[in-house]
Length: 157
Image 1 (cartoon, rainbow, N blue to C red):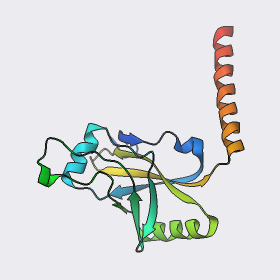
Image 2 (image 1 turned 60 degrees about the vertical axis):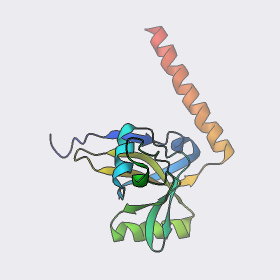
Image 3 (image 1 turned 45 degrees about the horizontal axis):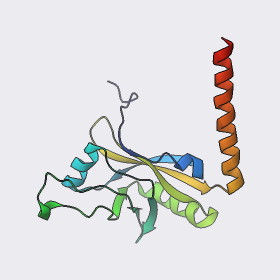
Image 4 (image 1 turned 180 degrees about the vertical axis):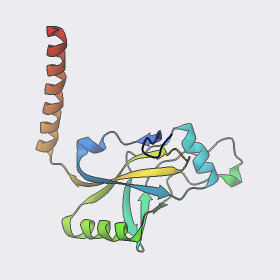
């Protein structure tokens, strides 16, 4: 398998992100995890729906992401389910993100957590601006029309 055809095994996805935000750009970041967090992620019960990424002390962190405790491990090995987790990106990317967040009022939304073809946990971060209520209604109307159009085309054939 070549590097271009990357296989992603999703551990968690934020399906509402594209509905609530205009996603301008995405980037891939590594994530620092403990052993029980990795095992729990492989179980696939994690959630990034309420989470966000932000700067803290000049570094990028993932806040409020829920990774449940790994029940097969002992109690002393467990991790805190919603602890802040450090994200690993290059300094140049971090500076660019920090400038976008400060100047343009953008937010950093985790789109998904997945395992790449090498088995490393990665977070897909979306650089986004929030949608207003009328924008959300427009998105829903467009989605409904696409569904109806597909249904009409299917029935016509």
